[in-house]
Length: 431
Image (cartoon, rainbow, N blue to C red; front, side, top):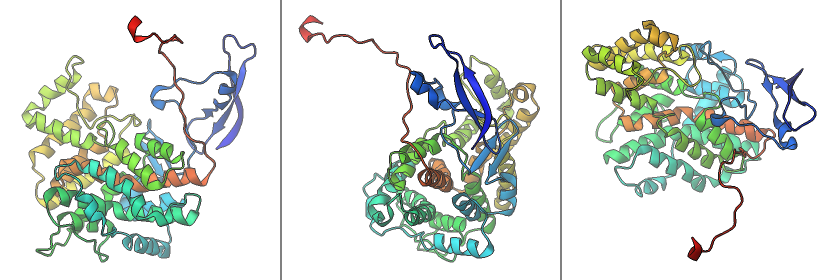
């Protein structure tokens, strides 16, 4: 962040002189007005949803929603999805640069060697009901990791932060698979060091001690790409939650558990599940026009899920990659002609051609196709958000580490108070 040598002048009734506010610029994006001086004047800003507020500066991820741009460390997501892989992106987020061949091999070895979890965690799982939602389990288990790995919780120690980052990235797919196995009453599967990150997750999900299971490399590649496309997305609700929790000095396991809780909300991490529910409600390609008409009717509660985005006002760049991946997966599994895919393709065509959607820039987003892919792979809908959380972990921990490594203040949003003015207590007999 640099000063622009420009200032904004704010005139406030009751204050004689205009208030001069400094302006800052980043590498990309609009200049920002520094309003931190206002509190000294007895003022602060009102910005519900923080839609006009930058709460931090960051070197990690940049989004240009108007032009459909997503950069990690300056690299476009399309290039990373085509040429890179999830663990290489993890390294980039944690270290700021892409790894050399040796660094990539060392990092992958480190992650692989951390994929097992403490054996006593199996007993921890058994404290949950079998029908507990996997996200409820993940909130509890990830938060409890600090009780099992308390040897690296000094947040002021760089080595401790590095070890914790590696542990979280490595153990999240193990815990995600365990939450699924527990709900099915099946035995937990230990990770295999001879498998890659995504293939290992599939093995722990679908393998059993009864027979040999070898992950399909095309499905494993698709799973790796799903993780990659969700790795970080700037200052969204769950990432901001991780940063806010971290600003108190809380340990990183607790902060990531807070992020998981925020991600659980249907307006954030549950959107791909909502897409499948919508397609199930439509039921058949012949009813598409009927439901599109309902979506256009402002008095009808029906909404098309998987279109439009809070940030992107153009085609979500991740959706383009996910569309290609969807076709690869369905072709490999021999379900290209599935009714669900046909409905999705028809809806996408309408969204890209119908003036109603084009004018409102309601383009398909990443959730539109990811749910179809996950369902085709055989992952139950209640686990979709757990997959999202697994993929988002390096972003959360990198954002947390960036904040802790620099100068930061405890987060303390203000409020516009609308309650009663000061009044005297009335004894119960007189009420």
